[in-house]
Length: 361
Image 1 (tube, rainbow, N blue to C red):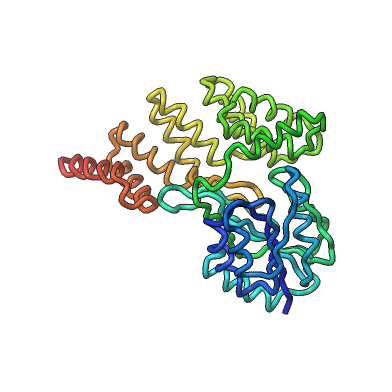
Image 2: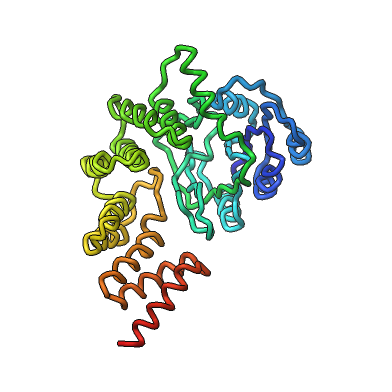
């Protein structure tokens, strides 16, 4: 059986921390919590779970804080979580079995990360991340924000364990990351490849769409970026141009994504919506149907937009087929959408209307 050090960095996480630690406390042989300047009772909560609570002076660098937390570990393997992450019971059980069966030859273990949800609890975004690493390998973090764990190993195991993001809204300063990047820019330091991308993402989140496009485009011109990175940035550029009202440029980057990979559901939904806006319902239905029919990506290290292949295209197909007078198909797609969004009153109303129309046939 392997032993596990849980390593966390926290700041003002009193609302989230207990839920996280309760979900993992029986699986970690050592809990290391590094506080970076909490002003609430985060530290007091941490001390209820561990006698290894440390302070790290905040220097606007998440990687530095994480590396400090890793340096305090003493067990065979290091598991990292954020305070707003939890393990649901099924995944806790899987981690228990992994702990008792993992070969010591394994250097790193990945887990699925369900990082965003819609208002009905459906997984909206998912991605795979390295979560458990052998301490003796001395793996390091890199990146001032949205830091990456640098792994150089061929002895890797992709587990079916799921880490669930359960943040309570309003517990983080929304401007924090952007300010860190802007401070870095003012210092004259050059962005790394990942920093350039994540700065663009922060600008995007803050609705600075024009400036975000500039940094996304700079990223596309860099060397050593993967095809998956290019697809992701094309998606972001398409959204920025949509928000800016430039439909021509939006379509340009939708189609440019096809240079790097076969169409993905989010691009199909964008094309479907473009035709829907022009009341070209047959063309819209083609793209929404394709979004549903596309096979799942084999590479689950890529951020996957689950909504674009589940309830969203079904709702839109319900509208398309209604407008085309194909009420049976419209009813089917509304019913399917309702299976993802139970009690959605708009869908329920659509189905009632369609039932009346079908009864008249």
